Image 1 (cartoon, one colour):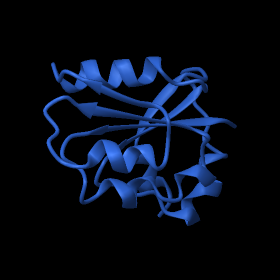
Image 2 (image 1 turned 90 degrees about the vertical axis):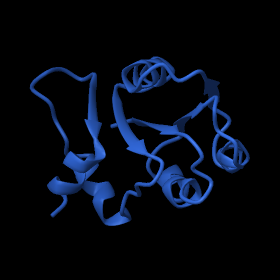
Image 3 (image 1 turned 60 degrees about the vertical axis):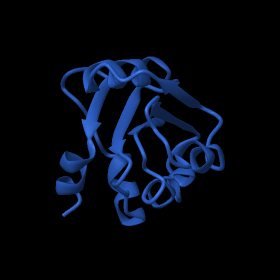
Amino acid sequence: MQVSVTIIARDAGDTLSDCLSGLSDLSDDIIVIIDDRTSDNTAAIAETFTPKIFRRKFIDFADQHNFADSQTGNDWILSLDADETVSKTGFPSLSRIGSPFGSRATFLSRYLAASFL
């Protein structure tokens, strides 16, 4: 199963590195959407982990998530906040996820985290 990861970030310089570190073991398709009002080093941190970085005007979260989803290259999308991390112990569980709604689905990390318990 191929998983894309999307992250919406604004002024996340303090947390983004922890969020992104280790995700390369899960996905080679990591997309970071940076709010155009960001004033810290969020973009520089993101650039050390992925080339797929987009700075966009923030309209609302739905708009940012829809844009992020449109940039993905895989059927499955893991959407994270910039202050969230994915435990390596949860990676095997990701490969067992199935959906009765078809192969294109977005899972929020809080639901995934609950499934790993």
